[in-house]
Image (cartoon, rainbow, N blue to C red):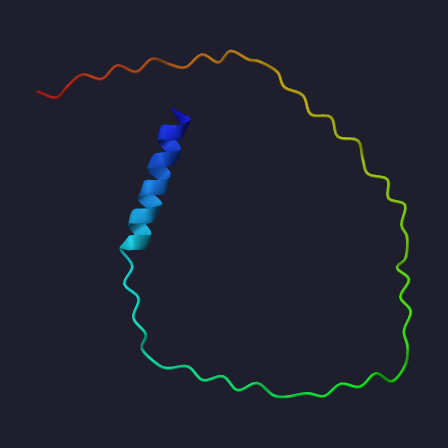
Length: 77
């Protein structure tokens, strides 16, 4: 049943994308600036260390029975 729902969702998504019409309306032009970079000193990187204590999280599940009202539908005449 889950596979059927997944296939349905994917089909609707593909149909939506296929309905798009894309047209190029203008040519693009990109000119990037040129840079020259020189090294002026040697570097040394030491990252700081942290001791992090995270809170304890307990996740549990519990089964419950929920009464759902019954709805009767009668066809219109």
